[in-house]
Image 1 (tube, rainbow, N blue to C red):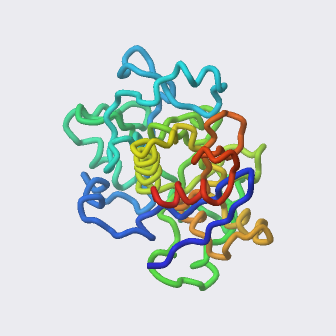
Image 2: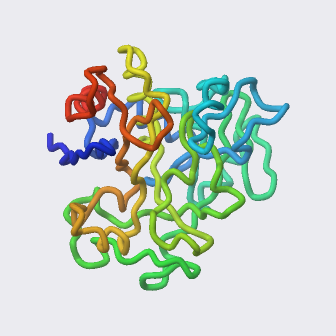
Image 3: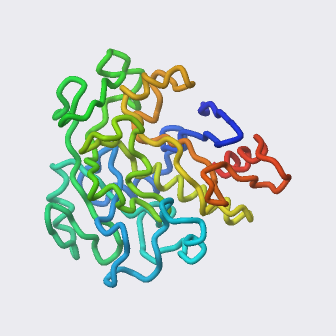
Length: 291
């Protein structure tokens, strides 16, 4: 099994490709994402109500936009039932051809081209823009660039073009995609003023991130402050940061990699997880052990 390279600085623990691509593909895990129709290989889950309403289950959202003092009063768990091995994935994005089959599930309610979750989960399903809608390097005014397969570098099936793209707008960027993360956490860092933006994101990555947080918490390390330093990268942006150590065919382009750090103090920096008075690779290793 190959493992991704890990980079470290005193400011951030840059972690990992947390995906089914690098992990044993357990059948039970795969089945969780194929309940109806053909889930796209880049399907992720998302809720329309990124902030809980009176109709939602009790509990508060977890958001990195909340101040450190506010976080103390916000429960980490929402009380909602999600999907995945963690039970904490709250979003699915599927291809248009899968939308009808999902809408036909018992208990589903179709409103405004979205599907409210069934009685057994708290998910909302959205349709993605298909890869075929991309025109050269662009989609709807947003520069994506070219995936390796478009350049003749199809190393394996894992590097085929994404099925589609999640459209991100100012109205939905705060959508809660799992217990600890919002859609905006995974947006590529380039083109800050361009809307809409487009993201490739996979449900197994969200599930893995939640499982890592759970494992660290179970081992006495407060991981509630896990933050995404870098989630999805457009191929154009990935090319621009090659000098900073990005791999040419980085998994960030495929929605199954994330660079993370744990910020327990709310100061935007990696915390001293092992309590030895300094931030070092020993703290990063604690995250890697959980991975």
